[in-house]
Image 1 (cartoon, rainbow, N blue to C red):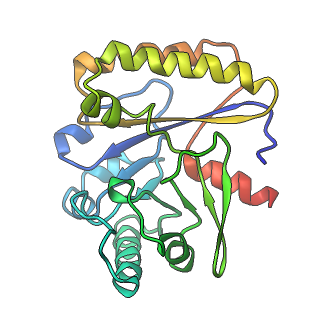
Image 2 (image 1 turned 90 degrees about the vertical axis):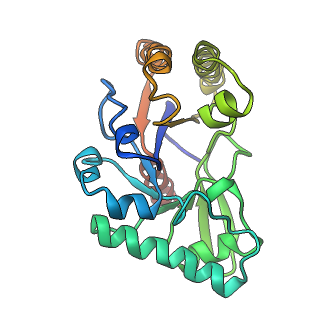
Length: 235
């Protein structure tokens, strides 16, 4: 589906806890990386405007303590629109992408996201290429989102160390490059400022990212929103 002849590496940073953690990252590969943000944090920490220059803000719920599970369809519809309204108020632009708190949806979520004006979702990991979802009023794009190359599930959930997580990123990239000789793929790397942003973990993460950049492959280091725009341009 994606016609670019390259490996696409989408690196996502989640900022959802504190101002200190929001400043924990500095990447020499560039600052134009996507950030998932919870609305109360965006509303309270105005200094994030400087941190997020050139970055994409992806809706991730009003609070990371929330879940869509148990909401009625009207309640969920209003919740999705409320998040979009507050992000637009903060940033001047409504979010194109959605990432559900706890990666948990209801049976109505794709329909309601499309109807609320979102163009893509990051809740699914069933393919290494973007996948079109059919909703009751049109299409919604599922951009690949990793639940494995993800410091939350790996370092916190499985108690892996920073070096092991770094090696996972490298091995994932090297293996996908072999498959990428036949078709373009998206490699998702999900990192959280309060996890990988710790200095003793950041050093190992930096080595993995430097390995990717030094690979000599045709790479597109980008944001999920750019992947979605490219996919829509081909539709």
